[in-house]
Amino acid sequence: MAGIGNNLPRFVNMGDIVIGNGEERFSTVLGSCIAIMMYDPSKKMGAMAHILLPQRRTIGDDKIGKYADVAIPEMLEQLVKKGCAIRKIWAKLAGGAAMFNASSSFLIGEKNLVAAQEVLEKKSVPVLATHCGGTKGRRALFYPGSGKIIITINGEPEVEI
Amino acid sequence: MSSTANHQKKILVVDDALIIRKMIIDLAKECGWEIAGEAKDGQEACEIYSNQKPDLVTMDMVMPNMNGLEALKKIREIDPNARIIMISAVNQKDKLMESIEAGASDFIVKPFDKTRLKALLGKILSE
Amino acid sequence: MSGNHYVINSKSIKQLEIAFKQGASEAGNALTQWIGKPISVHLDSITPVPLGESMNLLGQPDEPVCCCIMHLEGAFRGRLALAFSDESGMALSEMLTGIPGSNEWGELEKSAALESANILGCAFLNAMVQSAASKDIATVLPSPPSFHRDYAMSLLQGLFLEQAMIADRVLFVRTQFFMEGKALVWHLLFIPDTLES
Image 1 (cartoon, chains in turn green, yellow, blue):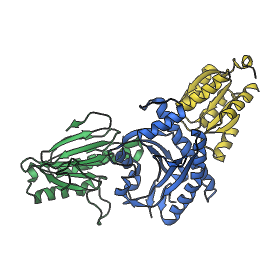
Image 2 (tube, one colour):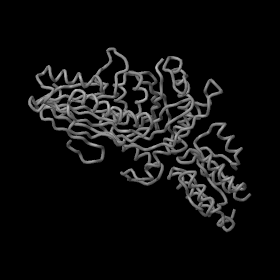
Image 3 (cartoon, chains in turn brown, cyan, blue):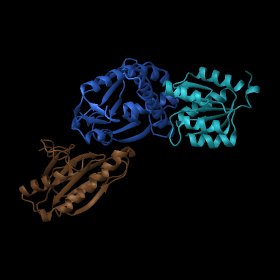
Image 4 (cartoon, chains in turn red, blue, cyan):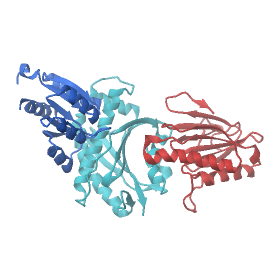
């Protein structure tokens, strides 16, 4: 699996949902998009999704990982299939910046965050930390085997959330 | 034109780009003209104009807060004799017409030729 | 067109292509005069691609990229973005300011980049408005450009957001720049605000 046996983390593109454990690392880059990271400490297993929009527009063969409302249930389903227990899982969120402060992008980052939080609350998954908002992009590095998350804003020191 | 005749003339330079303001200011100083001030937007331009009453204004068109066309109109309200040269990368007929109708003395398109700009500034200042 | 948005169809793509080809020639002339060296500008591509593919336009996703962005309203509503690496941007700034060896984005350096984007963007717009088939097309004025330095993918997400909200394929116009025969590492993107047909 990508990320094991080499120095590069596996890159999570827009709409991707990935599950991992052990020594794997997942990374992504965010603007107004949100990275949803989930972790089950009892199984030492985690999942990451890179969502672009709050709700799916139409039902089709589109990547469900793009939308908060369908990505989150899908992540949970995949984690449960691997033996995780929903009541043990927590989530952390990163991204949702208002890039360029333009009207649409200003709203969508915030909407993505609100949508993700609402769906997670409905699924009774606690959100332990967020690193969201602002006007700058972020790089998120997730260790699904330990739940460790490192966030970097360009030109600033990295932060663990 | 002798520098003795020029040294009393004051120019207000208006552009949101520092590099353009610097180019025009350097050019004006080479010709012995004084700088009445520099402004980053139309709002600042109007305020400085009211205080300094420069002999000539160089005015960019696209700027934040207040664009050059609005500033041109406002300054001409304050002073119907104000001499304003529009210096802009926007070269669209109706904007050109709107500037001239609002009382701009002339219009130069960026990127400008320095020799041409010097000649134009000199011509208008001598009128 | 519907309201202020483009409809992505073969006709509107063709119109964009004609307009940008016209603009490329004017843009080259303007840049040559601005920088003082011969620069040619060529239309590279104008086809819809999957959203995921568009995220590689400016290099590696986490590579820092500088981007000067202008918003356009009117007939060609969307964003115009001039993007370059630090090295390319500093080289451009040095050519314009005459100040060698600068390796930090100070106010003068940013201003040089921004004004280059302004001149380039306006040169395209001037030609596009002139070439527009309909003479009723309103004047297109850009916003003052803004300077951003961020991860490539973060910038692209911001640029393609309007389109991504309604479509899975995105449309952009890309141009290439050549100075004295060598390709410059600059990217000019025009991303129209769109409605899918």
